[in-house]
Amino acid sequence: MTLKLRSVGTSDRGLIRSGNQDALHAGTWLVAVADGMGGMAAGDLASSITIGSMAPLDVETPEDALVAALQGGIELATQRIRRAVGEDPERQGMGTTLTALLFARTGSCLALAHIGDSRAYLFREGVLKQITRDDTFVQMLVDQGVITPDQASSHPRRAVVTQALQGEDVSPTYATMVPAADDRWLLCSDGLSNVVRPDTLAEVLAGYPDRAECAHKLIDLALRAGGPDNVTVVIADVVEE
Image (cartoon, rainbow, N blue to C red; front, top):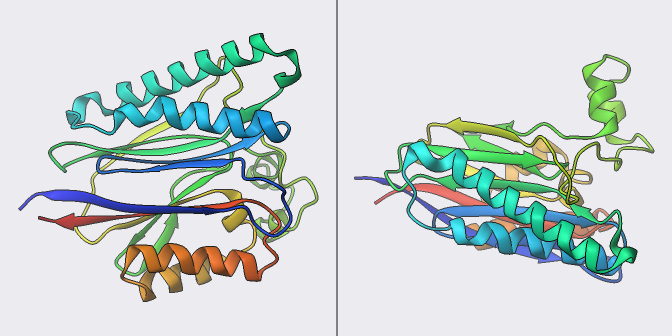
């Protein structure tokens, strides 16, 4: 028996925004979420460029090459965003978050790449853990002890990101982990995590075994909470086959 990744993803414009600047990939080996920023057309372009740059990584990859593969995808996305900005000065300042998970062909390891404030959560044995750390101004204040996590959730500057893919040199966070059977991963844009509490996320991840039903329930909860932003959800289960 080997471990495999099975995923599904969905995205919604939300109830306020006129378009959707999020993009996602939900594949056999790779799952990823990108949340564009910097004006309507430009944010949409930045996220689609980034997911398009990462998508070719959705192949069997040796575990010792996972991080290098993610780094290569991010470098390609950075180059393509830089080129797009150079082609049209009005795109200056466009960018995107990225949270991506790459599963090894052996099923024995996975690697995570993260920049911005989209999130990856791991639901394991009934416990939900946020694996990524937001690259945001308010997270910096939390780290410094200036405000509490509860205060951060309603802070007026909670949407200010300190790092994103914008065609310039950046320092994404990379990590490797050992997967376990029945792990459930949630990757999402802040359109979900800003309006649905972690305890509610955990209830839904536990209560909806079907991946597609789980993803749609989370989208529905974000919309019921006002849907102030685009909301994107990827559910990825580690299964034995």
